[in-house]
Length: 164
Image 1 (cartoon, one colour):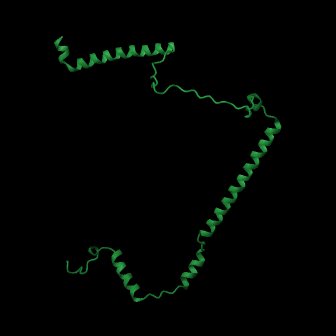
Image 2 (cartoon, helix red, strand yellow; image 1 turned 90 degrees about the vertical axis):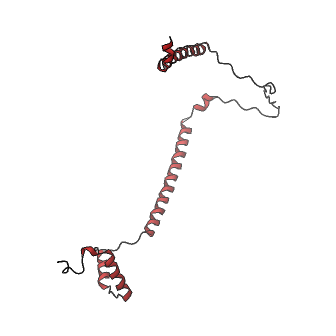
Image 3 (spheres, rainbow, N blue to C red; image 1 turned 60 degrees about the vertical axis):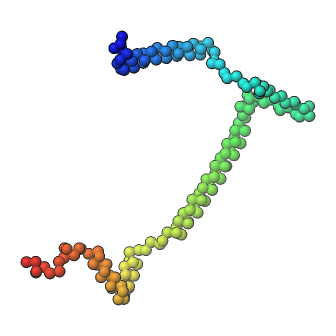
């Protein structure tokens, strides 16, 4: 008996078995309550606030609402259905016209904002007619950029004959 309580694994197994047994008993009790229709006790209302029921008096001058018959509302005549259909169709056509006009306006604004495409011939003509007139600062900048962007100095030594 002492060996059972000294080993923690055996204690865990015993606790698991006991908890499952009590869990099953609790589940059976809840199922029985559901079958009987009994509900667990609801919390009681505070004594200081009694339950209120508000009543509204109807004055004789106030007309009562007419009672609506749901069966009559669901019955529609073919004329009513046709009128509703025509109205929805007109609304849809108006919406389509609005969307088409918006799309046309967007296309027009995009055409205005796009640069004009030039043909290859006009570009070549302009290039032939262009005459280069570089100044001193532009030439210096070009030489500097050619050194920066060119191959590294180690690949083009200054004095290749001395190394022999």
